Image (spheres, rainbow, N blue to C red):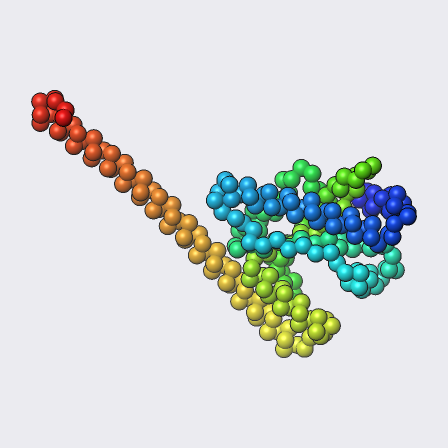
Length: 249
């Protein structure tokens, strides 16, 4: 509840400013903070491992209409206080990765950030939704340093592969058109597509691991060739040295 109380205190500090604008200002600031951290982590990973785990970073602030709909669905009155207290995904960051292994690697890196507090985790990869939806959700709070206070603000981070994101985007468009009541055959086909996406991710991960093994094998072979060349070269020099009575050219 600490974060919500800090937001409410910030709202009182800006009584002369529209409350909605103040809250959105805080969530936008939180997105900037988290986005910068993620870009730095990605750059560091590239620097150390010559590999970028993050393909894309998408950020968004939930619209007022979506927030009101969600509050009504939860049974709460539409108010700024309820919005801050009960809606956790007002500020959202989506990380798109190439492989499922990147998802858990990134989640660990995010969890190790000392100034980010992980509030909850929902692993829809190990435990997919009934619809077939897969993604890794982390709810974190990030401190926003204002001129006279610090406000812990919630941000939801979703981490998924390119294939998972494609499926989720398609599902969202379909269910938006049907207002959540899609025909049974469409839901069934979406579930089938989700299985195909999962198989594709598994196949691509296996392929990537095989490629990495080949690279390591090639590097080891190159190193061995260098060693053999040095050994053979030294032996030739020694043989030449003895053939010419210990005299070098």
